[in-house]
Length: 163
Image (cartoon, rainbow, N blue to C red):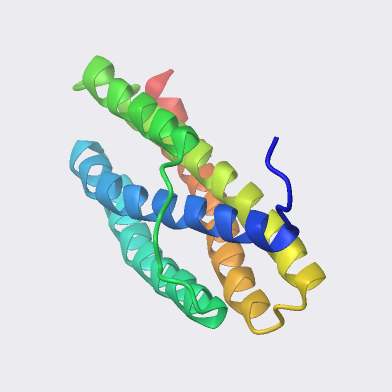
């Protein structure tokens, strides 16, 4: 058992986790955009890529506030979710269900990020990291907005096409 670990340590650890996750997502989104069959899907993934770049920059500002180098820590969860997405691309390539699968995979990513940002915001408040809170809240708001857009995309087109 690790002794002497504090909420500060946990916050930094989780910040490294989401930083790694965002960097992995940056790499995965262009692949998802290429794989998507619908134009809305393609442009949605590319738009989210630009947004993710901004989220990475905000996280780098939080690291700076803490006086720590912006470094990721391997996140098994995001690796698993991205691997599932790649599996869907392989197995459903050319099928009408591909976009529905891509959207479900992207939503799994969003829900993971939403959970992480919610936790980081609560801990930042607890630790008195008042300058970090608005940055983390902005990332959270963008993730939630993307999740809603993905739901609309699924409902309006991809799911019906898959059926």
